[in-house]
Structures are given as structure tokens and as C-alpha cells.
Amino acid sequence: MSEITTDQVAHLAHLARIALTPQEIEKLTGELGTIVDSIAKVSQVAGEDVPATSHPIPLSNVFRPDVPGETLTTQEALAGAPEHDGSRFKVSAILGEEQ
Image 1 (cartoon, rainbow, N blue to C red):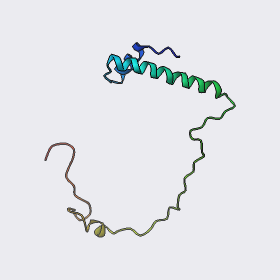
Image 2: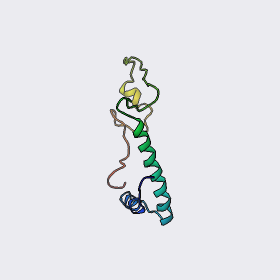
Image 3: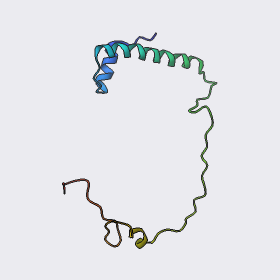
Image 4: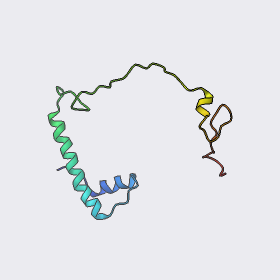
């Protein structure tokens, strides 16, 4: 098992601003040690002849051709708007001074 110490876990928790009880630190020390050991085992068998993969099955996206279609006129787009100024939607400010 890797030598992950409770001091290391407490330090990492402090850096991440996570409040942990002594019991949680003790539990996480063992769990992180197991994780580090598992990664070390995989690293031993994953030699230079084994290609790195991010997914076990090759993925590809299927896209349709990007063909422009009919668009709304300004008046059509603004027809259902609660408020507009003739060319743009009017919305309440959400940043800055309160209204």
C-alpha cells in the first residue's frame, strides 16, 4: 500500500478548503492509498507498446450539412416579445444597481 499519510490528506483538504473530521481524514487516507496503488498497478502493465486511450470504443460524431434555412424577420422575431424597442428585445438589467 502506498504511503499516504494523514498529514498529507489534511493538507490536501486544507488546500481544497474542505473541512474534514479526524475520522474522515483517517478513512480517506486508506482510500487514497488504495487509489494510488491501483494506478501504480495499471502503470506497470501499460507499457510503451500499449496506446493510450480515452474511451474503449472509437467515437465519431454524425453531423448534417450546415445549410442555411429560412429565418425570421426582425418583426416576426419581436412579435411575441413582452417588450422591444423595434429592433431588439428589451430585458431588465440583472447586474449592477438594483432596480
